[in-house]
Image (cartoon, rainbow, N blue to C red; front, side):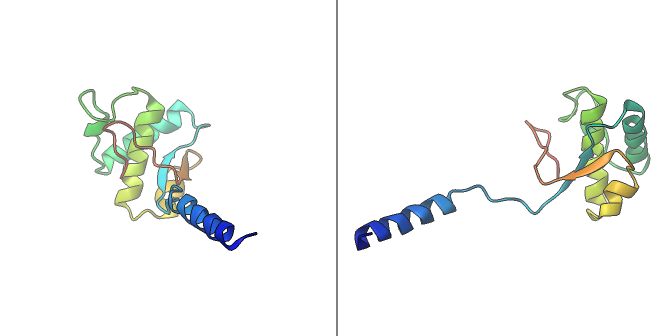
Length: 114
């Protein structure tokens, strides 16, 4: 390989590497896809009873739509998780068999998961 070609490959590699999306080390606690509505309704009740701000899932709130138990529970479960130090217990212990951690930011539109 010529010296010019070697420099070109190094430059191209550097450009490509620097434009890759950076993986987040942040995690979010959301509802597991195999959770049933009863579990998720209990999670919503639990989070709201313990002081999580439940206004975002009300009809006028940023996280009301989609108007599903799964979506509402996910938002509130993550709010509880975030407000309790993002510990594994804050997701798995308090939301047994219904909470999972993800590194993909579940925020959408104006519904922002912290």
